[in-house]
Image (cartoon, rainbow, N blue to C red; front, side, top):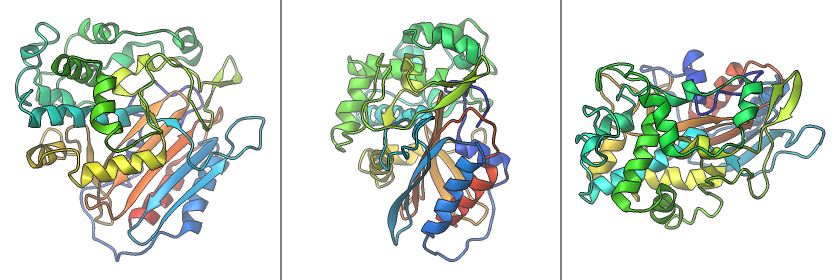
Length: 369
């Protein structure tokens, strides 16, 4: 985490932090299967909050033998109220996995071809060479629109409650040249999922949020998950996130999430994310052909499928999922492909500096290794 406001929807993900710390690798030797120790998990969360890397943290753990939740820190500055055990939070870019799942469902229904150019369905929208697959896999070359937003905490305050239309967000990107020729490189760009959201709307004839609700939230009964649109509030119990603005702590919990749109606006809980992750991994949401596509990596994109991170821990355990970062919140959904070991985590930002890497290493090792 950072002392200042996290860059909205930037790839502020625990997987990134873990990779930087050498916690995720492509080789390793598998260790014996053991149960996660609640005490060690709690110690990791306490280390996160004590170090100043987070104000609060909540986690849900499943390891095949047991399921439990843990929490640490405060829900709000100036209060001793603990983080809610099943509090709601902004999941950031985990939204992308929901959106990718909907597009893959539409692919299975014959309504979109993954290797067709996006302009077949949305003429003139972006470079004619960019395919649907490249958008979902971040190999399109589209400039990341969040890099064009005012990201300094004081400046971000000026646009914090602004309504953004998807076309406004897209224009920030298309006013710039492509970062590279489509399909030749991988680079995480939130613009890709603005395009994905527009594709869902074109193919379904309804707002992308309604498609997510109809196809995922309602069937799985994810009652604590929502696509908030312009609603600046988080309904129900939740912890608050902070940044330092003008030298003082500033509560950044309330924002207009349209700045994230289909790239990262969803609000959820660890319980609902766990239900979603299990349903996706077990094939309940996709047909077999599309189930293979979502986790398919390439030489250009060796650790990212279609809206899904695919990596291997040093101990040999393969995990997939996604993480997210949005002002005030960082989150993670991780599971083994067989769903035997799972972790859902939300941490709220503190207006202080702290190094999260040791705590993350302890948490991931205990749960998955």
